[in-house]
Every structure is written in structure tokens, then in C-alpha cells.
Amino acid sequence: NKTQASRLDRFFVSKSLLSSTCSSKIFSCVLSDHDFVDFEFATNLPGRKSGIWKLNCSLLSDADFKQLIIDAIEVSKLEVNNFAALGDFWDNLKIKIRRISIDFAVRKHRKVNAERALLTKRLIHAKNDFHSGDHLAAPIVKDLESALLSVISKEAEGAKIRPKAQWLEEGKKPTCFFF
Image (cartoon, rainbow, N blue to C red; front, side, top):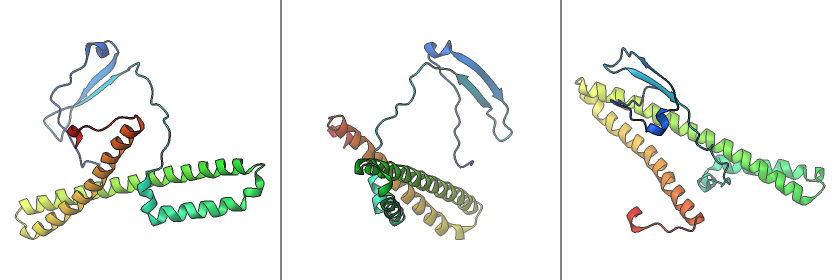
């Protein structure tokens, strides 16, 4: 979406990975004095583990999410007689809630990413206008910076919570270094 870019001047590769290099290509770029580098290599690293799913508890404060769960429970209650045992019904309901939760979280995450990208684009344009001499853009820049900071702060809160939960699950204690 062209809101983020990075310029790397060198690529360093471990000797152990160098033997597994599949291909590398260099493409010229008309937008920069640097070129694009496409570097592909294969590794024998283990795949992603399918850990235990945990509900993102911050979803419980979202009214739309709560309504989705309530609706799913109401629909499922009508189907309780279709199950041989109440335990089967309960397992099925938990699977439905998990699927709804994951889908909702993915949609919410995409929406936040789109909002952040839009704010970033608008901020870039407003800063360009300001640097071009349009001093009326100054309050717009300030408002956009504030909105973007708010979005980033919410993401940072989630990033702080995940390691704490992992430490607790693994029986570790965070040291004063992390405070």
C-alpha cells in the first residue's frame, strides 16, 4: 500500500543458509536510486506449531462481538436435541464460538490495519502540504498524528499483554528488565 518502505544497503546471510540459496535477482527501481532485490532460499526449519487457542479477552468489551456470541448461543440452543449427549452439544458450541472469535478478530485486525494505513497516507499528504507552505495544514497534521498515535498505542497494549500471558503459562516471572 506504499505507506511503509525500507532501504537496505546490504544483505548478510549465514554460511549455513548460503548453501541452500535457491535464487537471487536484482530489479531496477525507477522510484529510487536503489534496486529491488529478490532473494529466495529454502530452510529446513520446523513449521509453525499449532498451539492452544486462547480467547482474546479484549473482544469481550466489543458490543458487536458479544451480540455475535449471544446469537450463536441462541441458535445452538435450538439444535440441542440434535445431539446424542449434552457433552457433544457443548463441544460443538465451543467450536462455533472459537470459529466466530477467530473470524471476528481477523476482521477487526484488518480494519485496524486499514485505518492505520489510511491515517498514514493522509498524514503524509498533510505533511507534504504543510512543507509546501500551506500553514492551514498544521492542525490537520496534529490531529492525524494524534489519531495515528492512538491506533498504535492500542496495538502496543496488545503486544504487552501477550508476552505476560506466555510467561505465566510457562511458569516464568518477568524480570525488572522488562518493567
